[in-house]
Image 1 (cartoon, rainbow, N blue to C red):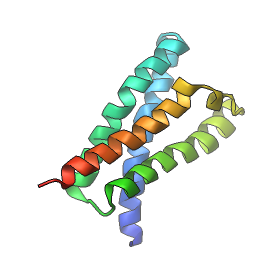
Image 2: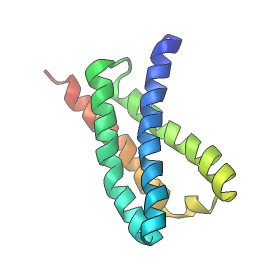
Image 3: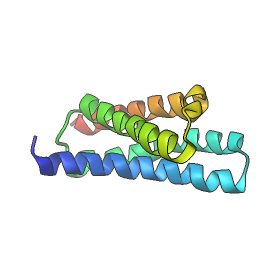
Image 4: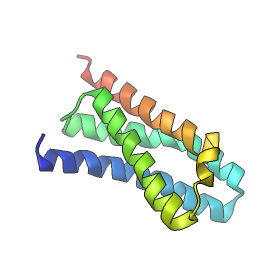
Length: 121
């Protein structure tokens, strides 16, 4: 796979992660963290459905399983290095099932399902 194709895949993953991060950032300022995490968990599959829809409609360089694994890996890596290490300076967020593990699973499932449905004739 070329650098350009990898860049497009990464860009889509970054857009999805950025939108999810924005929900956490805004939500934590206007409501409780519990409410924010619930809203985030509901929004994650919607966001990644839309991001995946764009990726599979216009590019489709990777199979659904590869794309789902890539988007999930991007989210995990960015959460570790940006959120945990730089912003929070703690890995405590990874103790929250609704804050991290459910969203990671939903990123994978939404992306995989979208890619699988887009490949059907």
